Every structure is written in structure tokens, then in C-alpha cells.
Length: 583
Image 1 (cartoon, rainbow, N blue to C red):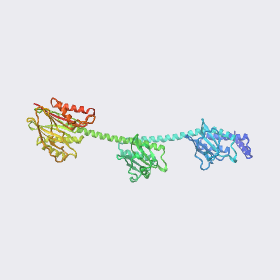
Image 2 (image 1 turned 120 degrees about the horizontal axis):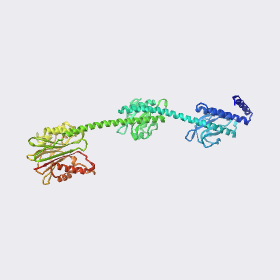
Image 3 (image 1 turned 120 degrees about the vertical axis):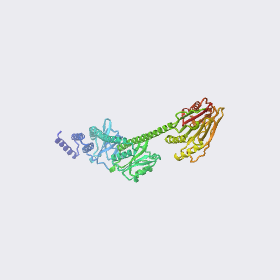
């Protein structure tokens, strides 16, 4: 139909209407023209909002109403106002869903439709579901909506359903594409930042990079990093964009605000408390925990974005992802530091072990009329036990067994001092005088609280005489050939702990068949799986069963201790020295 003909029909229709008549043919023609205009408008290249607004005007013009609105389904069971004309102030921005399939008149009373000033509502349906509601106000001059108007609206709804749905789908796709573009941009940023984070093993540098990256991404004016310390508080380690005194130096226990459990949150959404008040006073807007899984080491606090822009869901996701990367980098830096420290300790332990092994005798001395045996087992990599044999003038032999306090390199260095001192001084004075000089040397040249328990004896084989000093050590066990048991207790306190000590020298004669056994507390205090000590009585019982020479007696005692500890294993170093007098 040509445009002049359409114009002529419209003029004729207007003439009839001015006369109060409604010629059916012309009216039908007008409706068809309106549907044609509507279809053309819906298929145009305008934006969805412009298309819907133009379509609403066409419908309102055809039905001669001054008020109209189009509410579109939001996918959540409600219809959101999309375009409108002439609605009264306070008209609802959304309507509840309506299951009607045909146009219906708005019932009188208080409801959403009447508050919007609508008289007739026409559902726009597609695929058995309502995708929009077209609402119209009263017609001009109070004329009612008749069956013909309802039919026109049904035709209009049928024509509009597919274009409206397509437009909504297009808008959703455009929104998704925009969101994907933002995500891609953020992923590129995260990849670049993550590469820089993992390249550093310095915790302060990682914190600086994370905070500056977040500030740059969101154009935030201020940022601070808080790390959880051993006192259960969050201590500020980085601050940018504000003076240090403006940001709180530390925050209360994070359990108060449940930062790790809640994840990233706006400051105003935190539970009331001191932490929220402090952050708000410093004009921080978002807190992002430094966490991976159940591990949380602190948080990053960000200020507001420019122009009053608030942090959206995508912003929060980006901040959380970057914080997780920063936390992973911090954990890697911590593990690296722990590994370096362990390697240092391992080197120290290896040095200490080499020192300790170098101090022990390589062979057992041969002494006429006596059989000797000794053994030292370290419970850990480096022990604190020590024994030695030192040849003296006139065929005599000095025997030493000691237990140095502490472990590791310091204990090995003290053991080396004891070893060197005894090697130099043995036989130069009476045993008690010699150890008193050693005590003064150790007191003056070692750390406080370092000390040595020590048994020192000088054996004269020709006279079968042992002169000894027990300086705070486990008193040696002497089992006579006839079965009698004695303990060698003469001596005094430990060596190296006190500035001056008073020691005494004891003497004992060893007859053929006598067995002298000197042990460290790793023997007497060895624990069973139930936690009970081996004790002096069990040492004596094991030695009573010993037969043969010094080595056989040593093995009998060690086997008894190992059987006692069982699967529990050792808890301290074990050192044993045995001396058997023979014919």
C-alpha cells in the first residue's frame, strides 16, 4: 500500500472519529497500519530502548491513551520498568509476575498496576512464558477498551514477542561480552602481576607490588597492608597514599572481623567493632584477605575509587584473585627462608658432627692387666657426649667420659675445648686440681649456662689403682669379682657453671675380675614406650649378667637399654665405657 493511500485512510478515519463514529473497515485498516509501523520499528537498527519506546508510542497513538509502560521480565520472577510515558509520580519500578495469557483489565483497589495508573495490561508471551507486560492508561474521553482493542493488543503482542525477546537476548549477550572483555583484561593483568610476584622471594617487595598493583588497577587513592603476627594482631607493614599516622598501626585479632572466613568485603559491611571503626576512620573502603584456603596471613585495605565509583562484583573478584597470588608468593618466600635456614643448620650440624667424630679415639689402648671398651651413640645427628683415653707418663692412662649441655655446634665447640684442655693438662696435677683449672677456663670462655658433667680417672696398671673425680656425672658402677656393687661418688659439682668449685679426688683398687662401668644419663634416663626410665637398678642388673671381657659387658648393657626403649627409640645420647681388671 503506497504512502499517499495510507495517508488518505488515516484522514478518513480521523474524520469519522471527529463525528463520533467508528467505521469498522477503516478502523481495521488503521490497526493494520499501526501493526505495520510497529513491525517496521521493531526490526529497525535502533537500540533496544529506542525501539521499545517508539513501539510504545505507536500503540498509545493507535488506542488514544496518554499513559503507557512496558515492563520486561528480569529472570527473577518480576517485571522491571523498561520504557514509559505519562506515568504518575511514585509509579512502581517493578511488578510481580502475572500468569494471564490474554489482556486483562486492572482491578480496582490498591495494587501495583493501579499505582502506575494503568487500566489495561496485555501480556507479551513467547514459548509459553510471559516475557513482558504492556500496560496502558485510560482511553481519551473515557471510552472503554472493547473486544476489538483487545484483539488488536493480542495481535500486537504476537508481533512484538519475537523482536522483544531477540532484543533482550542481544542485550544479555552484549552485557556478557562486556563482562568477558573485562575478565580477559583482568586475567592479562593477573598473569603479568603473578609473574612478577612469583619472581620475588622478598616479603616486603611482594607486599609493595600487590598494593601498588591494586591501587593502579582501581585508581584507588590509598592502600595499606596488614600482616598477622604472633601476638594475634594485624600489624601494618605497608602504607601508600597517606601518612603513616593516618592509618592504624595495628588492628585487633582478625577473629573479631572474621576476615579469612568472609573473604573480600566493603568496610561498611564488616561487623561492628574496633577494626571496622579504625579502617573507616582512615577512609578505607575495601578489605581483601591475604589467604589461600584456610591459611590467612593478613589483609590489604583499599581506599575509594575516583568519582565515587563503588567496588562491584568483578572488582572484588579481581582483588581477591590478586590477593591469593600475593599470599602464594608470600608462602613461597617463607618456605624459601625456612629452607635456607634449614640448610644453614644442616651445615652447622655437619660441622659439629665432624668435630665430634674427630674427638673420639680411633683405637682402644692396650693396658697390661686390663681390658677396655667404649661406645658412643648420638640420638640425633649431633650429640653432646664425649669420651677419651689419654696416655700418661709411667704407663698410666687417663680415661674421660663427659656430657656437654646443649646440642649442635655450640656443644661441639665446648666439647673440643674440653678435649684440648684435658689433652694438654692430663697428668700435670692431681685429678681434682686439674679439673678445678678446667672449670675456671670454661667459666671464663664459654656462654653462661653452659656446663659439662664429667668423670675423669687416672689408671696406674702397675698398682691397679684408679684415682678419679666425678664432677656432677652419673656415678660409675663398680661390680667386684665376688658380686659386690659399689658406686664411685667422690668429686663435686659440674664443670663450667660456677666460677669456683671445690673438687675431691677418690681412689679405688681394681682386682682381677672387677668390672668398672661409666655411662652418661642417656643410659639411666632411657625411656620405655610407657615413659618409664631405665634407672640405676636395671643398669646394675644388666651388669650382673655380663660375662667375659669389657666389650662383652658393654654389649650386654647396650642391648638391655635398646630392649627397654623398644619402638620408642632413644631420647638422649648413649655413651658407655667399661674397664675389666684381668689377671
